[in-house]
Image (cartoon, rainbow, N blue to C red; front, side, top):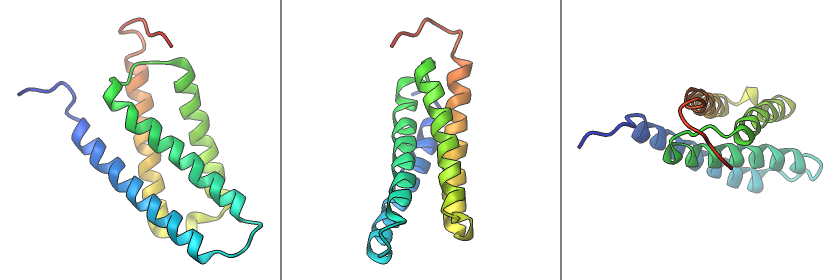
Length: 125
């Protein structure tokens, strides 16, 4: 059976790996960090990451149809994600660099596919 979405399986495997790894990191964070002042920043980082993962999970199954609100939302979430990453100085953790760069690359792929489909058909909210 021929499929017109050859990216769907690798895309889903990568997102599943990123999701599982992020959940493990969130669980380890809750066990290890006792400082109350840094918790809001870390939870904001994981919340942005959860929104990006969710947005990327639903995009391949919708065919990456262009939606201007979702398009701008993904761009702004990506920028906020990078700011949170820098604020928390997570660039010292090698595994987070690879996972977060993978998430950003998948988000860029989603944005490129959405932009490619922008003129294919009318898209409504």
